[in-house]
Length: 290
Image 1 (cartoon, rainbow, N blue to C red):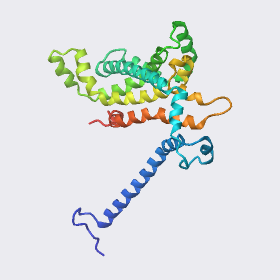
Image 2 (cartoon, rainbow, N blue to C red):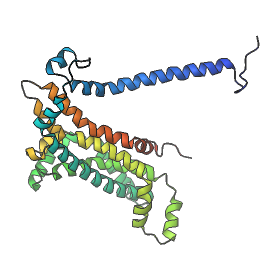
Image 3 (cartoon, helix red, strand yellow):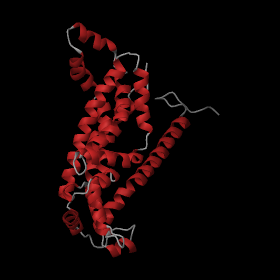
Image 4 (cartoon, rainbow, N blue to C red):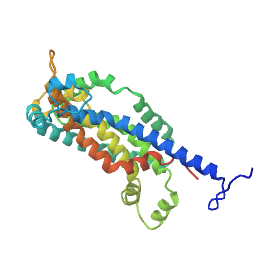
């Protein structure tokens, strides 16, 4: 029998049908994966509007009575307004310090050649291998001696220090892809290295900087261990510390805990949705050359 050939594509009609079926199966699988990925968030927001009894008796079902007052009570009991302010100050200050120092170091390591370059690259790589929480005790001793405990600096400085290696490698990998002819042309026109950095390299590396900013934001915003060890003043507590107000050694108020978690997770969702395109550009930069 003669094989039927599509008049539009020139390919066998059976092959076109198989392609449509394959695409449909892939779309279904991706949709299921997205649902599985998003379900924890859906479950969190459902649980935030349940009573304690319903949280245990109907954990995976919609609330029979939507308790919107859980959000208000959680906000008041945990002092969420003050905690959100403290977390915002610490996160923004840490991000600014990380991005400025990381971009400067990445610019030098990616655009210049010098004898100690391999040493510094290895040093920053070593910084990525050190377990962060293994440094809590020595950092606490240092903070106590220099008088930084119970201050914003007790969180800002360690956050920036531990995020710098990742920032340097991500931004440096992106800057390597920028042709050096642009830099040489700017030097011929009389632009100094500071001008090249601030006027050219910094704007061009925006996707990589956005990636670092998102990853850093998630780490700084959600950190609990450093805030627990270095902060004891109620006026300086961050969002993760405020969430612990609903749990004691004997019981946990799940309806308020879930409501507070729903409030705390909203900023991370908004930030990610706003910068998701920049994240993908920064993560894939330098992956393909030629």
